[in-house]
Structure formats: C-alpha cells, structure tokens
Image (cartoon, rainbow, N blue to C red; front, side):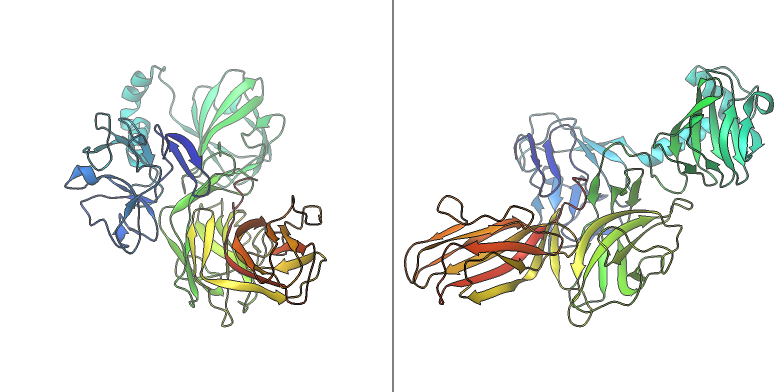
Length: 499
C-alpha cells in the first residue's frame, strides 16, 4: 500500500508516521494462524500488532482469520513502515498505549527484523501523575515543574450559584468541590489557575462566566478532575476535564470510530462487539471499551453476556441498530440494539442515566428471532449467504422502487449482483438512488445496455439506498420475456463517520 493513501472502506490510513489503531497487541511469541485470545481479547477478523515473535522478521500488523494470518494492507509493503512508525492499541491490557518501531531503516517486509518499543502507555503516565500528586512528593514534584510551593488542598462546598474562591481559597491552587448543587459562577481574580477535583456530583453550568470546552453543562462525578483558568475577573475557562471512571475525553476528531466490529455465529441469539472506541453522537466524548461485549436478544441488562434489547420483545425478520452506550455519571460503557436508527430508547430497559451513544452497525433477525450471519470488515458488511431480493419478468418501462436486504432506517451503499435478460426489444437498464431525480435510461445514461435477443447482461453494481432500504430501477423498453434478477451480497455503512 502506498505510504500516503487512505483506504476508507476499512478505516485504514497508509501513513508511515502513525498507523490506524489495532484491536490488541501480543505479549509473547504466537502462532500466526487461527482466531485466538491475545492479551485478553478474543480475535475475530481482528487487526493485531504482533511485536514479540521469536523471529522478529515476523513482527508487524496482521489481520486474523481462521487460517493463516496475513499482514494488513497498510503494513504489507516495503514503503509502509519506517523507524519511528507509531501504532496505537485500542484493546486488551495494553489499551490506549502506543508502540513505536525501533528497527533501523530501510525496512523490507518479511526480510528485516522489525522491533517495537514502548512510546506511550496509559499506565505509565497515570503512575507518574499519581507520584507527582502524592503529598509525600509534593515539594519534589513542584521543584521539577518549576512552580512555587502551595498551600494544602482545601474542600469547598458547591452552592446553587457562585462559589467564592477569593475568600474561601486565597492561598491554594488545589481545591476539591463537594456536594451536588449547580454552580453558575466563581468569584476569582484574573490570571489564577486552579486544579479542581470533584468530591461529589455537582454541575458546572456553561454560561458567560463558566466556559466549558464542549459548550454544554458538565455533570461532575466524584474523582473527576479539571483545571479552572480565570480569563478575566470572575470568568473562568474549564480545561483538561478528565473522568476517573473511564478515559473518555473531549473529542478532537469529529465522528471518530475504530474497532467495535460486530460478529455473530448466525442462527444465534448472541451478538458481540470487539474492543474499540468512538466519538459519541454529539462529538462530546470518546466512548471506549477495552474488552469485547456480547449481548443476547433478551431485554437489556448491564454487563456482557446479558440482554441487549432497548425496549419491547425481539421480533422476527427485523432490522436492529447496534449502539455503544455510556452513562456519564459512572463512566460505565455497554452495548445495546434498537429498531431506531437515530437513538436507542433510554428510561425503560436501559436506565435514563445512559445519555451518550454511537451507532456502530446493524443486523437482522431471521424467522426465529435469531441473528442472520454476516461478516464485517470496517464499514463493509457481507451476508454469509447472499439474498435474492428481485426476480421479475416483463418489468415494464416505469421506474420501480426495489426493496433490498440492507439496513432499514439508514442510507447505505448497497452491493448487488444483477443479471438482466433480453427477450425481443433492445433496451437500456438503469439503477439509481431514490434520492436522485428519476431519469429515463438512454445509451449514454444506463447501467447496462441490451442489444441482442436472447442475451444477458450481468455484473455487480453499488447504489446508495434510501432509508427504506430501496433503490430504483428502470428500463427504456420492455418485452414480456425481459427479466431482472438482483442478489444483495452486502452493503457499506459509514456508521456516522461522515456526520
């Protein structure tokens, strides 16, 4: 793969400096074949950083399968890897760490010994920060950071209104706010920077006096931390907000999504989602899970292995949309599914406290209310058994909306195998998205032209659907024996990446 290209079908970026995240990373020499548990993550067509092989020539980024693994497409060429290439980890015990190639270049894949070193680990940074913040090391830490000694942290109760930091905390830059009231302002002099930890579930109201990075109110949970910077007298900016419960942070990459691959055995009540992270629907936080979550078709209950349905009872032959969900008061992350393509139902099976969510894909039940088997590769979903959706003769010349086997409620790029039969009159055949203007087929505007009696035109087409899972077909002439056969093999669903 060229070193500066993007494969948006699979969410991969062929950049030498930073690769797309992997689902997990090895910790020891492994067999490069078969699905297996890597660092606590059960692989399933997963993207894995292999970095501990006895023969380092085998190290690199691989895509797993039930047979022999293959190097993933952004790391299988001699121009894809260099000394210093960074690889982020999305799942397993090493989640949110980054590894770096330390081998001297140039690197020839399958010839050069490729070694990886730690560039960043969440655990190491957390341990260092805790050391700096420990009371026993406060003086040394502040000497390292080049700041003056400070008074000990003090507790200040939240109030329904303005908190006075001038009188209550004049000599400290470290406070803890307790209680559960809504704070609308702070009395503070310009230029002060104060570290705040939450001792209760109070609210910071976003307004002219308290400016949050998201432009929305913040509901703090005990253990959360943030910085207050006084940009003018009695006006503060909330910075570097961090939740203790999860690594959710202010999103800087709009609509980001990595990992979170759906999988099912088919004819089964269970469906699973792989480790990964995604920006929520409001682009306010990153929702992440470091381990797989499996859900059954029962009513939703928190935790892997439990039910995932948001409301009602599971139905036969019905499309459901899968969501990664998070409750900001505790940081708990889970998965659910709903017939709604816009948002799951909260306040029923799922507590109303879950307010953050991101749609990560869709699946359909069979006649027994079990999941139909499909395979997911990034934004691409393929039926294990392609579905014949259209088989008609004498279709006429009027435009016809054809319902096909793609998710209901979202616009997808349908992938369809088409065979067009010709009985007696030459004609042109056209497939379009229903959102486009209906146009009559011509020799210059057609998907397939038919010119000889008794012949057939066939091929694979990709057409955008409407939210009713429909595309439009039309032909310029029609005879009784003309035929149209359409078999849906899969679809591409950007899952909000372009929102």
